[in-house]
Amino acid sequence: MECLLEIPRWDFHWQGAYTFAEPVTISGQDQVHLWCQWDNSAPDAVDVEWGEGTSDEMCLSGLYVTR
Image (cartoon, rainbow, N blue to C red):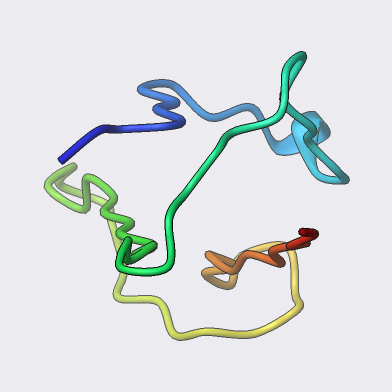
């Protein structure tokens, strides 16, 4: 398994698009997974749900594949 992207300290202003400097090659048997986690251990932390609001969780990905 290879991690293609890891962002340990997310900045809200980074929202938008990300592209790799070089294309990533995958084979027909490869699988691509998106896995996200966040630290909700602060004393004043509240549970969040997926949504498009500033305080919502927005972990999602788009994938462009070409031959």
